[in-house]
Amino acid sequence: MNDYRDVLTRILKFISECEKARGKLSDPDEFLSLMAYKSIAMDLMQIGESVNYLRKKYPEKLATVENVPWNDVVGLRNVIAHDYDGIIKEEIEESLQINLADLKAAIQRLLNE
Image (cartoon, rainbow, N blue to C red):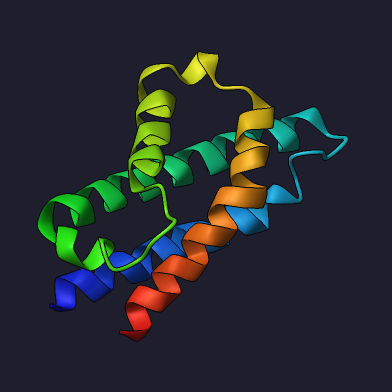
């Protein structure tokens, strides 16, 4: 079961990295803002990959946490990976404000079980 906890811990690390980069999204330096955006997009992809792995290998564990749109987390990963140019900053910012806070709480609950 170590693998399970390792993946959850990795998701929390990616969420933390998104939270750190979030403050740079509106940086007046356009280059820093762009790098923050790309960093967050990459972290969201990694989160989606990790959730997809958990969904396949430990579906019963994820089912214990209600109100988390696991499919949407993976879906965002797919959109970023396959339509990177189609992603807009507002979608990333919304994910950071709403979805990541809920996801972080859910992952912490799973780790505490």
